[in-house]
Amino acid sequence: MFRPIPHNCARSYIWTMAGLETGVKRKAGVVCLQEPPKESSVGISHPAYNIRKRKRVWAAVRMGSGIATNKRTDLNKNRLGDLIVVDIKTRGEKMAMTLNIYDLGEGETGEIPLRRLNWQRIIRQGGCSTVLAGDFNDHSQRWDPRCTERRDATYWEEIIHEHGLVIGNDNRPTHYWMRHDSMGESVIDRTLANRSFGKCMILNGSHAIGSDLKMKKSELEMENQEEAGGTQVVGWNLAAMS
Image (cartoon, rainbow, N blue to C red; front, side, top):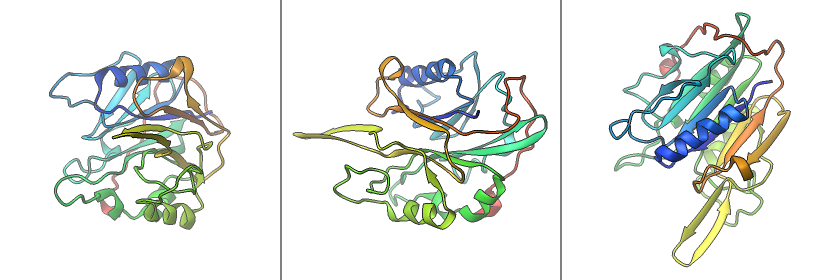
């Protein structure tokens, strides 16, 4: 069983550590973090994880889960800081690929570089199971029945449709917001895959992590998955796919 958990940390050290601890308790193979704290303010590590870091996304791979990453799993760091790729292997065989995504414009232009990628090639590279997990920052009734104003949704609606991706959410909100005199809830954090999910849940109660975005755990059935020491992953570079 492969268990990825995506979570937006809102640049908070406390919420980052709470998210990692939740991953340990839930035996998540990978914790996909978006908007982590700035490394210049505090160095962050955790004894249970190997953490791959980019500017706006981190991938924390739990030791002993049979999952590992190497330097070649990331895009060229000068091109894209909003995506990390984790290949998942057991017994030397690639079983799945997880992409940790933070989809939000940056800078004066608001450009989103990851939207220039060739997703058809990327999803095919994932093999039998490709998982996209993260903060997509968009609103649509396709994944949120409470949505009253569709916004920034066309791009990912088309990706989901074109590649037959399964939405792993269960319609419960992942984001709670307050603006001026109004407040509400929405689904902007999602897990997508090219195969069906065994189970998906929002982690509340004893696993709530304090920020306005809730953690979500998804489970995908995988053959030959077992707890083991880290296995070597043959990395690959997505730069040529843009």
